[in-house]
Amino acid sequence: MLENTTKSQGFSLRTTHRAWADFLILSIVLAVINLTTAGMADWGWMKLNPSPWLLIPLFLGARYGFGWGVSSGFMVAVLIYAGRAFYTIAHDDPLHPMPLGQIFSDNLYFFLILPGIGFLTGETQGLLSGRLNAAEARVAELDDKRDQLEADLDLAEESRFQLQEKLALYGAEHSSLDRQLRAMFEPSAGAIFPNLLRLLRDISSVTDAAIYGVNGEQLKRIALLGSDSVLPESLTLQESEIIRLSIERKALTTIREVWQEAPEFTSPHIAALPWLGGGGKVAAVLLIHRMHFLGTNWRNFHRIQMVCRWVARYVDLRVQANSASTTGAGNSSALITSPRALQATLNQAQNVHREWKLPSTLATFEFTEPVTEQIAALLPPAVGSVMRPTDVGSLEGPPTQPVFKVLMPMEGVDDAENLLNAALQAIARVPQLAGNVVGNLGMTDEGDATEANL
Image 1 (cartoon, rainbow, N blue to C red):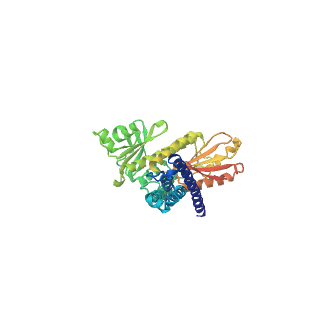
Image 2 (image 1 turned 180 degrees about the vertical axis):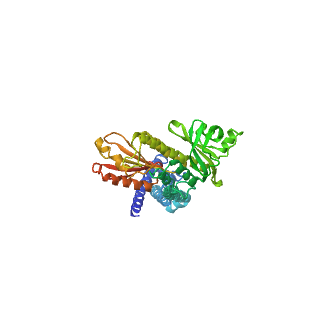
Image 3 (image 1 turned 45 degrees about the horizontal axis):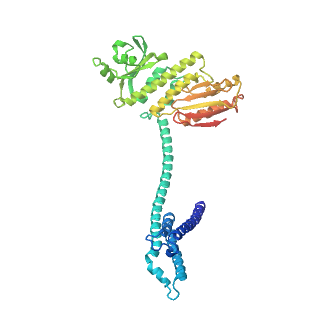
């Protein structure tokens, strides 16, 4: 408040000085023009109508407001009256002097119009200034509201992401998708495919389904959910048009699409989803026979497709890791892959975020200064000791100062921070790494990272 008052006083002082300067400059200019044109015989251009002297109150009233417009008009009137009076005293007949009051009465309109024009222009300037001030106040008010709305929007976005992370997917209130996926790959979890079918039952209302391995034209059942009366142990492609179409298209195929593309065929099954293995070859097919009626919608089909895509990705990564003998770096369930495989998994996580608004989290662990390759090789086992089955890690960068990245698909900030803190604690227990590593968190929905220094 004190600062605003000081600024206001400084503005008023500058305005006063500038107004006086404008008044004097205009008065001198008009006086010189008056003397050089009409001479002393018509001092003040009183015979002219309108008089150029009206410019002074007109200009000052328009520029500085009511006070300066009226007061400058009165000052000009007084100066012109005084000049005319001195001239009359000096040149009139001494025996018959002209009354000085007659100067005023003979030119009443002229003397009144000077402050009058200042009044009009001053009032006009006041009205315009009032509107300008109101507009500026409105702009300031809108700026404050915009800042408040931006803050509310940030809070709403944060709350929305937290809600999505807790529910995992709309319509799956009783299951947390990332945790169930993680549980499927625990060493004690058992076979993957039966667990996958049970997960689809929990989150997508699938009641009868089977997974068939594809070997040429032959299909052999490798997992079953529900009754086997309509899902036999073996099939051929000629026996199921919906499976044939899904394999040809390498995409989810529903009974509706079978009717559209091959109306002469029918199928007792609802949908088929091919399982793409290495090189894009179809290795298996998920065949859905029955779902709850309210669950038979495109959102559920997309949900099934997304879950199967993730499971297929994990299976493929674990096959690659086993062949490279890198699984088990510090943890029997830790998944350590190549930088290229990690990037492909990150791309898939970003696609899931764009489609489902489920952000994933990427943790990076960096050395603060170059180290030997032997010390750098200690970082993956240290972080791997706290990694979960669905976390994907990769060591990349120069050998003497590499970066170890850990992708946590569909993982929220809270759980990611817990893993980051646990990893930093594990690193601190390795003497060669303690004090030389920093950890960062970044999400697929934002560019900023949260840094935690060890």
